[in-house]
Image (cartoon, rainbow, N blue to C red; front, top):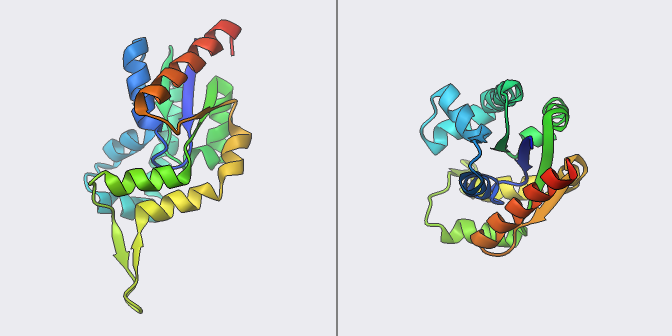
Length: 182
């Protein structure tokens, strides 16, 4: 079997689909965002934003990838959006597992965020009073890196339907990998 690394833009379904597929397949699930938050003892969205702004968060995620590379056995691993774009981490993931790009149309991601009821971190520009929604900005930023995700991935999965459809697609993709020994 092996390790299956899920990459993609923020809120495309890496953690949600990965956790559900891992439960169904009876595999361990790891999330580098969660591991980084635990490592840095971050609890609030603003704490995470501050840590990301000064590169602590990315460093903690890099450490999580290295830690996961040393683990024995199979696993499904959701990565932070930025980790896959770091050559060191992408190389490590490629060496020890299969990289699956979870693709979701940005308009669906943004609609999901708006309808989720979750509060986003919003920054206000002190000069002109404009507001910056950090989740929306992150999605837009990483969409510009789409070609890099595509180049890094061994496989891709379109996640533009329901959560159940996405989970079933992921399970089928992992099972196919096992059959052809990817």
